[in-house]
Every structure is written in structure tokens, then in C-alpha cells.
Image (cartoon, rainbow, N blue to C red; front, side, top):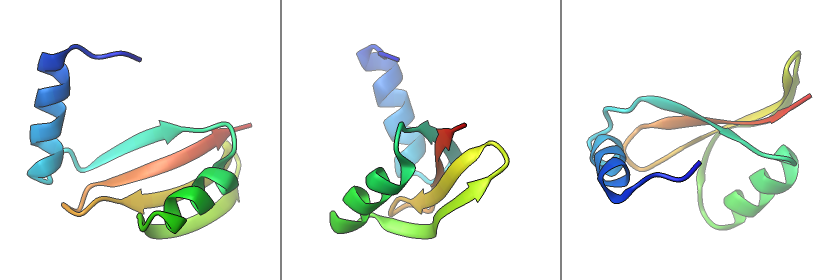
Length: 73
């Protein structure tokens, strides 16, 4: 999905203030993406786990927003 500058700026403001709360990121390989992000210092709230809908890990940003990183079945 591509956003214009106005939408990107609005999302950045929400993320920076910790207001957005949560989001979902889709990946083709949750475990590989998890390892890559962890190696880059991304804070991990939960490691990849098998769920009924696929594989999910939860990461957070420095403002307290958390993101479900999901590899759908």
C-alpha cells in the first residue's frame, strides 16, 4: 500500500505520540523477518508462535506502539 506525504506525516505523528496503539504487519516469512528485525535491535514483545491464523510475533517501537507481525496460513 502506498501513502501520499500527508498520510505518511499523519501516521508518523500518531506513532511518535504513542497514540496509534497497535498495528498489523503482514510478512511472507515471520520467523525470518523476526530474526532480521531482532538483529537490527527491534524490541520483541513475543517470539514467533503458531496461531490458528498463521505465525505471529509481536514487536514494539520506542513509543509503546505494538505491532503484530503475521504470516497468514
